[in-house]
Length: 418
Image 1 (cartoon, one colour):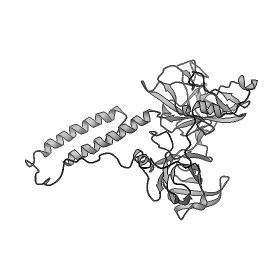
Image 2 (image 1 turned 180 degrees about the horizontal axis):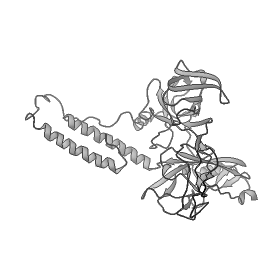
Image 3 (image 1 turned 90 degrees about the vertical axis):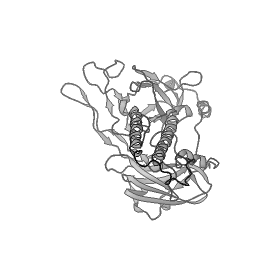
Image 4 (image 1 turned 180 degrees about the vertical axis):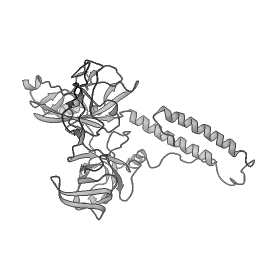
């Protein structure tokens, strides 16, 4: 199959065409014609060469279905007889937990008051196993709704085992990455990153059933929820809906620098602190010693990967967030990140923070329509800031490209048959 994205696949496509030509020449050494073989066969209709199980087709099919405004909670009580699944009265500080082993099939049956399109959210605990992402295949009323729902992934939580140590020459050593297993949650999303929004699923009014087939890794499930679809507000709407308060001096004059390597949680063990000695703008900097002074880099490129930091603000108020970053890996491309505050995207504009190709470290921030830095309302105390890899507008382009390549492959196979 021909695949999109990189140049090597284009070369591969050329090789396939050449091979096909050679094959046709070889076959043409046979009989003069195949008239008898195709007698009475209509060859004028090429048929629909595209996929009929894509998410786009699924959305088109349910384009006239509504968006209910109430969530539907699914608990352990809705669990039906399943294979490789058991209910535990207590697990890691939570009660009535569904433990689904690798290879298991867990099924829940529940009532939906109003039919329509919902998002699905799962609260889970990544049971220690091989340390790879948790993968599940989704069934809704005994059917996989579309291509992509058969490979849903849920990340584990990773952190540093200790503070960086130093060798006998004074170079900092990268700490070991360990799993920080704890309760977390995630929406059912596209793991390829073509769609940055959570998947939408149709549920009929009345009885429905959700099945999760374990493809990889065990998991403990606290709950499943059908979430009412809520569109993020624009920045102007966000500011209008935020509390109107008088900024205290402590908030007005507040400034805190959190180093990238000081992240608290990551979605992958490959996202660890590393070093850069090419610029004195990195902190801490040393021209001769290794200093762990940056996070991410080339390893932080896969859609869905995220890094999280903790911040603490002195008073309720509005704060701006600046990110000192550098994207010097993909010339001519833009790297995009989604910003989350305490697990939520505050407004639409936060879905795409862009880092253009640049050899220098730059301070990047979201700006409003007037060019001023966006303000984020935060209450006094500790908060989390997360940046997640996103394809941004490129996702739609790659999705169309993949569909076109699928059609080309279908045409190629049909030519071979003819």
